[in-house]
Each structure stands twice: as C-alpha cells, then as structure tokens.
Length: 139
Length: 62
Image (cartoon, rainbow over all chains, first blue to last red; front, side, top):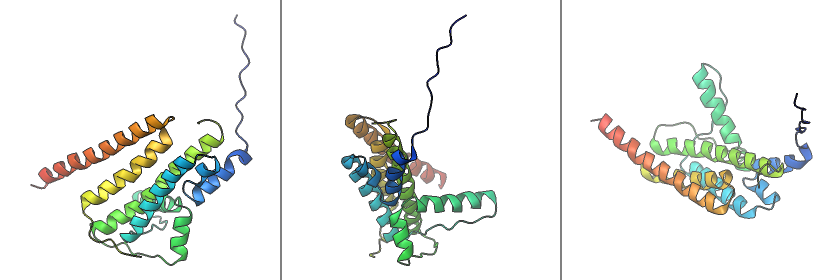
C-alpha cells in the first residue's frame, strides 16, 4: 500500500496582499499595475480604457441602469450597469458631472454605448490580472 | 465635451479592435514578445471578423 504523501495546504492569499491593487485597479484603470511596479503595462491599460471610455462619451453612448423584467432585459441592463461600473473613476466622474444620455437610435450612439461597457469590461480583466500578480500566481 | 458624430462602422470597429487587443495582449501572456504577438493576433482576428461578417450581412440583405 502506497504511503500517502502529505497534501500541500492551499491557503487563500491574505486580503492585505491583493486588496490595495484590486481597489486601485478598479478606481484608476491600470493603477493596480502601477502599484505592483508594472508601470508599462499599467500605462497601456490606462490609456486603452481611458480612450475607449472617452470615445464612448464623445459618441454620446448611453449608460445602463439596472432593470429587472424578463431574463434578457435583466441580463442586458444589469450586465451593462456592471460593465459601466467597472470603469471606476471615469464612470463615477461622468455620473457626478451629470452625464445622462438617453438611449437613442443611430449607429454612432450604439457604438458609444458598447465602448462605454467595453472599457469597463477590459478594466475588469486588468483587475483580475492585478489580483493574480499581487498573489504571486502570475509574474 | 466634443461630439463625434461622423464615424463609420469600420472606423468604430477599428478603434474598438485596437484598444481591446492592447488590453487582451497585456493581461494574458507572460513575456513581452508573447504579449505583442497575442495582441497582434487578436487585432487581426477582430478586423478579419469585421470583413467576414460585413460580407455575410451584405449577401444576407441582397
């Protein structure tokens, strides 16, 4: 009978290790990478998210508000709201400064709405990346 | 805030593909060369998809 080798303990990383990078990464796109001394990557992320968000505003894209109803409505509006929210300070500033574009027809507005959500979702990827770097799962 | 009303489908898709590819390249791979190659590949896939779907819609509407 083979001896059982001791299993390595899988411990979740401490909150103090990753929380500052994740919080800063959410608030300022690329900020988590800057905090972790990955300034080149942080700059590229910050520039890309900022460009998409600002172009979305210039195209007069609409911000999503969470809505419930049928399943598709809930997924689209709540998912869109979460996507918008992931842009961090850009989203908060836009709302605080009174940006309220109604959802109107037209391909430019439509692209603007998608740009605003995509900016947040790309920042979400960057936040996950910052988390993995902070916890040592990734270089 | 200046408005941007005169942007074509292709221009919008190009800008979207460019910035999305940069972020996808930066967050996925482990070395700079791999990041560059992955970003370029993503960009090529985005633009290729724009042309393929564009032609499909063109023939679908005929």
